[in-house]
Amino acid sequence: MTAAMEQTVLADGRVELNAGVDASLGTSSLHNEDLAPVPVAKRTWTTYNYLALWIGMAINVPTWLLASGLIGLGMSWTQAIFTIFLANLIVLVPMLLISHAGTKYGIPYPVFARASFGTLGANVPAMIRAGVACGWFGIQTWIGGAALFAVVGALLGKTSFWMTAGEMAGHPWTLWLSFAVFWALNMVIILWGMEAIKIFENWAAPFLIVVFLGLMVMLVIQAGGLGPVVSTPGTKEGEFWGMFPLSLMGMIAFWSTLSLNMPDFTRFGRSQKEQAYGQALGLPTTMTLFPLVGVITTSATVVVFRKAIWDPVELTGKLDNPILLLIMLAALALATLTTNVAANVVSPSYDFSNLWPSKITFKMGGIITGVLGILLQPWNLLSDPNQYIWVWLGTYGGATGAIAGVLIVDYWFIRKTNLKLADLYRKDGAYKYASGFNWIAIVSLVVGIFFAIGGAPVPPILPKGLIDVELFHQLANYSWVVGLVVAGALHYVLTMALGKKSVE
Image (cartoon, rainbow, N blue to C red; front, side):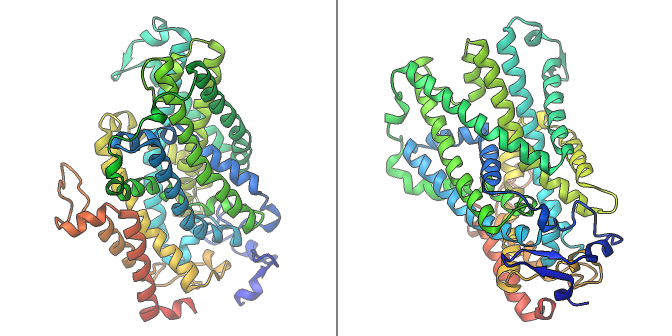
């Protein structure tokens, strides 16, 4: 049976399996209900749903602090906001290119990766992405628990049992309780499924906007103006262009890994136009405006509290109105939850399901993610954030650029967005390659990673990187872009030279 007989292409370009074909795939070890193509009738996400998703994901504590990091390097606040805005415009491009397959075919990221990496080889990029997500899930959950602990402590008072509780493994038992509660909230939401996540993001987005804008306005009024931060030039304004490239790469890296698994969300899209508009409206705008709110609010704190308070958790602890404290507690919890569930749990849930479709469901994949998040012991990892976040996760995350390069080139330039949908779920279909692995894609990925992070320092193991050559040290500074370009170009050249029959 040909691909044309197995799938229907609608007038708007979306594709679905014909009646009976999806059922016939039910016995395949590569298929389960969570990984199966979403029927067109169930692709109901609109522009607002994607806008709300991005508002929910982008409003979080790290985003609030983005501008502070750049200002700390010596930029003025206007230069910092411009750098953040441009970075998110840039990362939006690969994000939309990869998102297209989700809406067109109704498939999640690991199934999409089967077309380029092979039905089994897709587990390589899936597990790389899952590893990054699990690491960040643990960290964000610990941060969320710590915020919950701090705000409840502010409500009850510094001398309350909550703040003076006995220690367990170096931390108050109330902090461990806060971590457990926050972890459980993440698990409950993921166990409700993707529809619940959509509803959760829809309602959380406007609440978060109102609360944080309200906090900014309140402090600006109390300060009698915008404060000194927004009127102070950067400490190294004349050196802006020297620090700009690396700062831009850092801001691009903030959402670069999520660009891989956006098909996990866009597979529910009602149309390409709606998912693209929703993301374009939600990502660069929220990622620019929320750090700006952080800058203005912090500037006002210099007048109100006599010092710049960048951390919104610390700032919340300074509020003496119990109603405001409760509202901020809800906002901080929601801000971390909306980011953590969507960015760090959805992806590995599908990725682990893809590893063993017949045994691991989406919900079970979410539980695996939660357990690994605990086993990684984020409380210890964060005790040396330079080593873990900036060395391990930063280097490891840089490797995902190479995955994006292979996916984009394979889908857009080699296959011209045409996939045989049913064969993505067959061991003996068009994407079996060599025993389920497309070695051209694997080699391209490895070479892309080699160029991207080969010169990255990994102290104390490899203080000068795997390759102590100045060129590779420079390339490591632009790891995500280097990986994308090198892996994508090599995949195209090798496929055209050696593997063209596999895409005909």
